[in-house]
Length: 302
Ligand code: NDP
Image 1 (cartoon, rainbow, N blue to C red):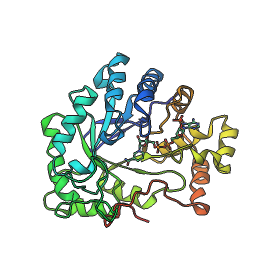
Image 2: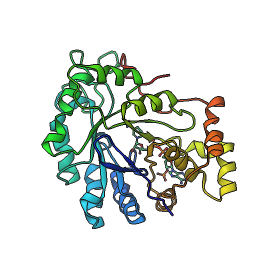
Image 3: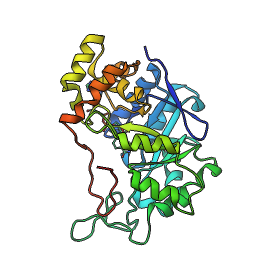
Image 4: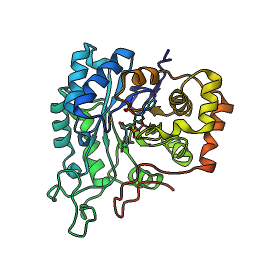
């Protein structure tokens, strides 16, 4: 049984510790996945404009019969809209069929050319990313931080921000609001200790993405995870999810498989020794799994 743990954001709002991720959940499968999740007790759903599945996510929320205000819904601003965040948010709200989201994140620190050769991933003739040269995330944040006042999002935050980029953002004279959340890749191969300490000091909540090691959940095969799972009579995925929550981060495992969605919703308190045993995995295998090349904009600490 899920413990229903929650965290409190710097806005005072509460974010359920465990949510459903929906990246690579195709439009034909995500509707069912979100319905199953909401039925199982999830009250936190993570999507993004670029995932191309907001309409189906929204339909499932509506059809679940669960009151909108009982669900914590996150979506994200795509790089080609960084000069015009409210327009991208309006599109997302329309697709989702809701009046507001609970959290709106700058998806990546990199602004992309809105008039480039591709809607999502514009490139230059030499194949590199077509980034906006006269814009940066500080300017984007200047616009994003005005969004809560519109009522279209309850909170705003960032994603894929390193400590260096957070510091740049927080010390900019135009920054009036501290991001509520920084959603980053975080799992035993990439425990993000430095970022966690920094975020805690600044009052920024961290959400851990790719908690199972992303596609095909490779972290389940780790011996330390399997040993704990066996001893506690849990699945390796449940151990990985509980490790994330026990470290103070919310976590958004993705699945489109009903029985996995249901069994993943089972966080429990891992004791210190088990947390440390999982932490130790990065001493032998340290790696980043989601690593798009954004050109000059470095989005990680390592
Ligand atoms: P996850 O670490 O959540 O792993 C997903 C994979 O694990 C899928 O292949 C899924 O398969 C499988 N899986 C899930 N549960 C189980 C289980 N109990 N047993 C075995 N396999 C399982 O990877 P993601 O990269 O999807 O990260 C989670 C979410 O984080 C994303 O969906 C997205 O919402 C968010 N994210 C955000 C990013 C950002 O830039 N802000 C970047 C990447 C992710 P199946 O679905 O077939 O069941």
